[in-house]
Image (cartoon, rainbow, N blue to C red; front, side):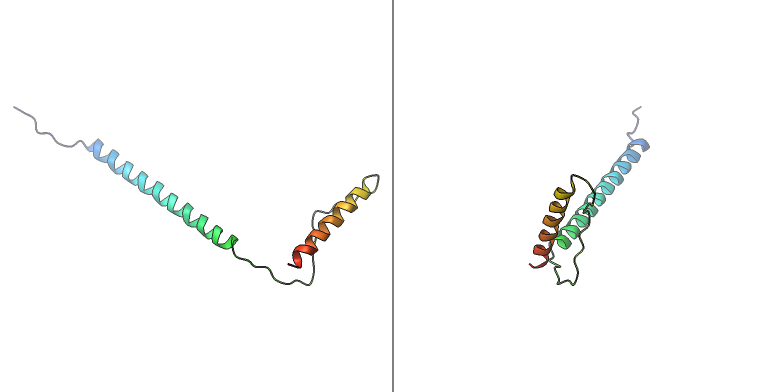
Length: 87
C-alpha cells in the first residue's frame, strides 16, 4: 500500500508566517519611503519671510583674555545672520 502525500501543517504554517513577514517588511518600507518623500517635499519649500527682529543663540560671553575673540566671533555670527535675513 502506498501512502497518499498530504501537505504537512507545519509547511503551511511556515509559508503563512513568511508571507506575513514579507508583507510587514514591505509595508514598513513603503511607510519609510512615504515619510522620506514628505520630509524632502517640506524641506525644499522656501518659507523665508521678512522679520522685525533677529535672535542670535549660542553667543558666549565671558570676562578675561578670550573676550576679544569671543566678541569677534559673536559679531561675525550676527553679521552673517543679518545678511541672511536680507536675502
